[in-house]
Length: 181
Image 1 (spheres, rainbow, N blue to C red):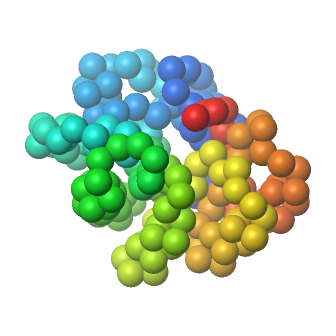
Image 2 (cartoon, helix red, strand yellow; image 1 turned 120 degrees about the vertical axis):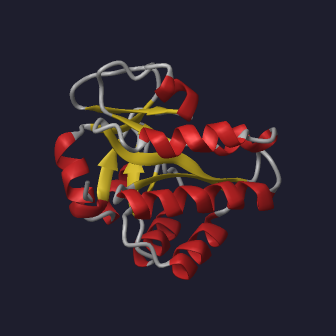
């Protein structure tokens, strides 16, 4: 699914615990296996907060199996978080696995990033992905948004995003979401 298809299909590209025809619900691999997304479209990924403990190989297997479900429209929420989760090295290793899966499956990547924007931009330059990377829940300064856009990221804004951010993000690179975390 392309970024354009994602934008056209969903009014909300990142939510938790809600389903609906124009919502993209984010679930972890075990939730996907257990059917917690119901009949809805969903994205699947291992949140960086989950890296505080070792992630079982079974979770990665479930993640890879989930992409065969035609309701999976994106990979993630995954990423880097300097405030929560495991070590920076472990978070990055888990994130790289998501990037590989995103590329292999041809699906956009929903990226969680807290105080690691420099590194996430370095990874994008290094890995040269073909699939879109969408920074979810962006609330940073306009200058950082410009840097992310220049680095090739798309940006998703929640309802509480400052109007100045919306004004600088081109419509073709802007997503909406209801996640507030």
